[in-house]
Length: 192
Image (cartoon, rainbow, N blue to C red):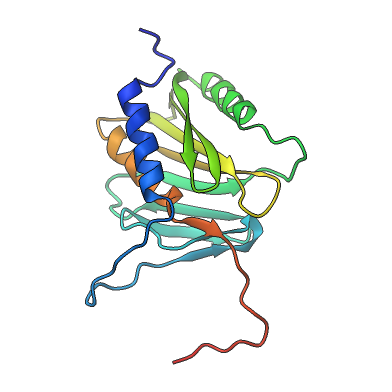
């Protein structure tokens, strides 16, 4: 068995989850509070709803950092973009991720898989490494920016453990909430 490949069942599950979460309507109950949203103009995206598994840690014009809603879980999800480029290559981004993982202390690359996402093709890539105090698992999804010629990078670092499947589902929930950023129209007022 090649350990650098994701088992077919897991890859299929990831593809189904990614497709199911992309563009789906979210029904809210009348009593449920609205989930926060996050506009990231510098990335050209909006996170329509921050999934319940996360809360916003920091937000800048070109970066959004989410952390698990349950602080005991630990971890950081960073959404950022590579500089605009005429030669976008998601496979090269995955190769760079592999080199980064393998270059870290006790780095072990666990594989990658092509997926279909809200902006088209995406790649899922994962590895483990030793930080100063614990083993870390890093899952990265790279996809195309819906508004510009660049790659959006979602990187989720969390303590390695038995909850990888739940962590990946939570990451895919975030991917399913990504839409193109639409700036507010000039002169519009908020209605009450």
